[in-house]
Image 1 (cartoon, rainbow, N blue to C red):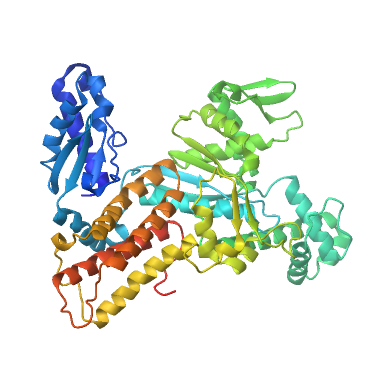
Image 2 (cartoon, rainbow, N blue to C red; image 1 turned 120 degrees about the horizontal axis):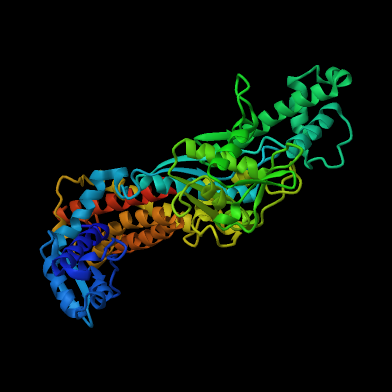
Length: 559
C-alpha cells in the first residue's frame, strides 16, 4: 500500500461519505490532491497522517473529530491498514501492519523498471519543444540547462503515462542564416570576414570542411557568387546541425522531431499555399484577423497579449509572429493535446504571444499550452570556448564534467531559479556532491548483491513481517513514496522533485545499511531476516535506478 494508493482510497471513502449525507455535501468533488498524506515527524504517530477531516468538516457542517472517526472506521477496513488513531482536533494517524509495509520490497523488485510509473496522464499527447538553438553555431551553457531540463521533463511525463514528442525547432530561415552563410563563404574563400560575421574559430573550421566537400566552390564564386553562397550556406548549415545533434546525443538528450522553419515557408509540390500562407486564412476564419496600415494583423489582445501582432506587412514579408502561429497550427494538426514550450529567460515576452496564438487558433489556453521560462546558469571555473570565442560550449562542459554530473546538477533545481554552480564540486567524488552520493548508494546496493551471492544468500524466502527495525520502516516508507513523487513531478512539470527524492532515499538507505546486515557476522547463521533484507536492498537499488533514469543519469554498479 503506497501513500498514493492510500490517498486514492481515502478520496473514494470521502466521496462516499459526502454522497451519503446528500444535499450540498453530495456536490463536493474530492480529488487525490485533497487527500495527500504526510509522513509524521514522530514514528510513534504511525506511518502516514492526514488532516482531510479538518479540511472538509466545516464545508459539510460537522465536527472535524466526528468526521475523522467516520473516515477512520472505513480506512481500517483497507487491507494492510493496522489501525487509525485520531489526534488533536481531527488528525488521522494511519499505521500499516508490518507485513503490508514490507510487501513494498517485493512489489518493487517484481515490478522492476515499471515501479513508480503510473497512468495519471494517460491519454495526453504532449509536444515538448526545448533547446531550439539557431543552427549557426555550437550549443552553449544556456542551451545545456534547457536540454537537461527538457529531456528530464519528457521522461517524467512519459513515466506518468503521457505520450510525449521531444521537438527541436530549427530556425533555419531568415536573416541569421544569410549572415551565417556569408560568414562561412568568406572563410571558404580566405576573405576578410564581413563586418557582421559570426565570431569564433568554428566558422573557419566549417569553412575548411565546406572547401573539402565543395572543391570547386571558389571557381563558382568567381562566376556566380550568389550560387556559391547558396551552396556554402546549405552545406555549412547541415554540418553545424549534425554537430548539434551529436552534442545532444552525447549529453543523453534525444529528440523525436527536428522541425525546420523553412517548411513553413515552402509551397506544395503543385504550388499549393505554404503553411504560413494558410495560417492567416485559418486565423481569419476564427474571426481574429484584421487589416490596418497596409498590414495584416491578428487581434491577440483578445487573449491577453499586450498588443496586437502583425502577421505580414505590405511588402509581403512574414513576421516572426507569423512563423510562430503557423508552427502552432502545425502542432494542433498533429493532434497534440498540450504544447509545452521551454524557453530561456530572454523569451519572457513570448508567454503572452504564444498563449494568444493558442487562443486565436481556437484552443483552450488553460489546457492546451504551457510556456515554461528557465533562468540563466553560470558555472564557476568553466572556460570560454577557444573554438567559439565568446561562449562556453556544451562539448567542453561534457569533456570537463561528464554527462551524468552535468545533467543531475542542472535537473535538481527548478527551471525558474537562477543557478550558480561550482565546477569543482560538480565533478568531485565526495558525499558533498549529490550525484556522487546518489550513485554511490546505488553502487552500494550492487556491492551488497555481490557479497550476498558470494555468501550464498538468495531471495528464496520473503518474510516481510521481519522488517521491523526503525531504519527498515523508514526505508520502506521512502520507497512507498516514489510513485507519488513521480506523479507529482509530472503534474507540475518539475523533474527536480525526482532528484531531491533520490537524495533523501540515498540518505535513508545509507542509515539502513549501517544498522541492518544482509550478511551475518562471523559464524552467525543465515536466517530468513537476512534473505528478506536482500529483497529490501534490491528494492532500494531498483528505485535509485528508476529515478536516475528519469533524469537521464546512469546508475553505475561500481564507483
